[in-house]
Length: 316
View (cartoon, rainbow, N blue to C red):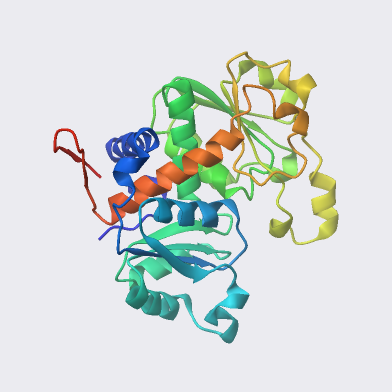
């Protein structure tokens, strides 16, 4: 039995296989429509989510399975003081696989150590968000045709942004990746990522404050929102939230084939006028998230799907 706590839980070869499976699901959804018949996914979300929770539910329903769970700590026995360890023991009696989001870093890992079913980390505090990273990798791979030889700009909240942390960990395993880290001083990438992940692996990177200074060199611009829920006081949040706003004027500085990604939800860091730009890929990115999570569920449940024409099995 395997769990997914970090993108590093899969080797590069396994990641490539997972993305191949997700791509096949995109092309042939009917082939997988009943793959998880009789299987149940538990979505244990201790903090609010729209995209991640609904994409997990959509993924399982698209595979012919069913879904149960809760969407906030207040609607679970956590409000009565039940521990994550006890909750997952109970959930293991009801479901075949679990997706867990929790505001505390490491909570899904604790759950995985007590669980008798596969557990997927659907986001733990400011730490990791591996399924968003898988979605990001599929988006880049599908639209750029490769995951190497790219200059990636990461913009906004690089301190608390778990999507950014997970993406850096995943991308450094591909050849010729370069990062431009775009943030105010207060929201710079944590020192452990700068030193232990980037510097120790000899990954080229630069840190800049102005988005305009980076636009012309980027193949991918990954925008993030400044997260109100990660700040200890409202004053700091208000001061930081409008630091970067991507608009048409800034887009005019970028390459014609640059892609703009965003894990969503956005607040105002990407102007709606950018939505019609063919380089805006964030809504396509959300769609890819369903295919990736379908592939992940199949992989962790060790389910294979036969190809109708020739009887061969699609490896999961």
